[in-house]
Length: 164
Image (cartoon, rainbow, N blue to C red; front, side):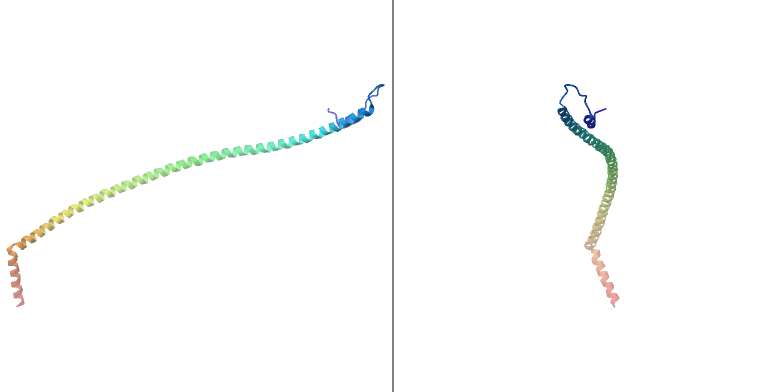
């Protein structure tokens, strides 16, 4: 068991015939007591400081563990969000490609239909022009023909007779 300052203070030495000077020994013992008390106070203060540091260390270790767990959860969540975003983007791309294909197919179908209509209109235009040309030629032939003059005379005579 370690000595206390009180143990040092109360220590009595046996006196011998030619012993040490009592005042010198007492003075030295007083100095030892002061130094020993100082060391004990410092030791106690350091033990308290160590205890506080251990509590802080424990507290910070708990915080560190919590932060590490939070970081892991955040990383997992980020990975989940990233995976979900990739899946969603792939679905959006597939949907866009489907819509693009559908629009292209509809456009091609409309284009073909319009091309067929244009060809049909060209054909009808040719038929109409040929018929119109034939009509005009028939009319020209009638004009060039003497029958026209006779028809005109006949119509004039009829109108005269009707007026009478």
